[in-house]
Amino acid sequence: MEITFKTQLLQDLYENKKVKDKEFKSNPALVKQYIKTIGRLKTVEKIEHLFQFHGLRYEKLKGNRIGHSSVRVNEQYRIIFLEIGNTEEPQNIEILDIQELSKHYE
Image 1 (spheres, rainbow, N blue to C red):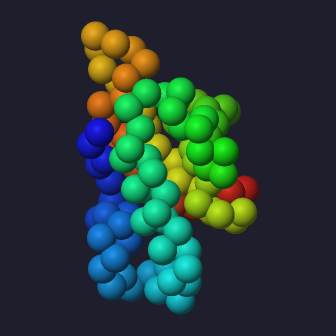
Image 2: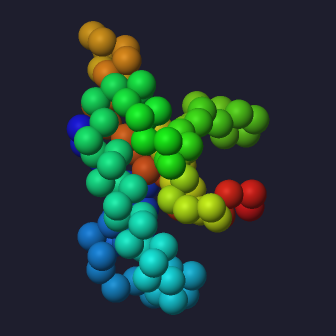
């Protein structure tokens, strides 16, 4: 599966490059967990496989985030992404477009 990133910051975090954002610069444990979580997402071929990782707490979002999904990085942060599926097999995911890494209730 292909992973794309909405912003350069998200890609730089995944590639463990130095970033200027204080929130992530001062929290190496969060960055390490983010990289690990993206690695798990890369292994997924079907939406159902996300449920195998109970700690990720995969969910479809509602309200103004309808169409997005999320997984947890830790208790405080989550990764919000778009699932871009295979047109032949709708349950197969071809691309995950990472939209944001955010605090859960902000």
